[in-house]
Picture (tube, rainbow, N blue to C red):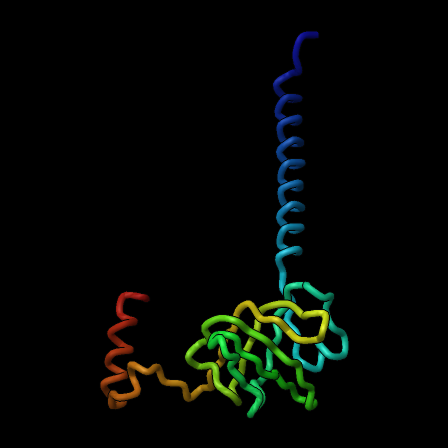
Length: 156
């Protein structure tokens, strides 16, 4: 008995390929799970806070009158509010997006600190349905529509 029959060799290769495929899938699922960042509203973060240091996203409205810039010029502190009057203090060091203003929507990516302050690594500003890019604000409506049409030609 020297070697396996060709039929048995194919069966062994198929079984090994399936085991490798399942292993790769489990490894990918584990990697994605550890990289996932959960989304919290302010009321959810206060009611059931994530673990200190866990990467999460906090979304809500920037509270009017809460935005302050530190002396270094790049550190911002503000509060994110939710529907139920909930309020989460946030600290961010970096360059804020152009659309980031008081009273606007924001999604902050970062971690909850031990003192209850959310330390943001990144800010994503949200705009309403009336948003117009700066480049198009000075144009008349027909000019802006023509420019938008020209930029979409060839994308279909």
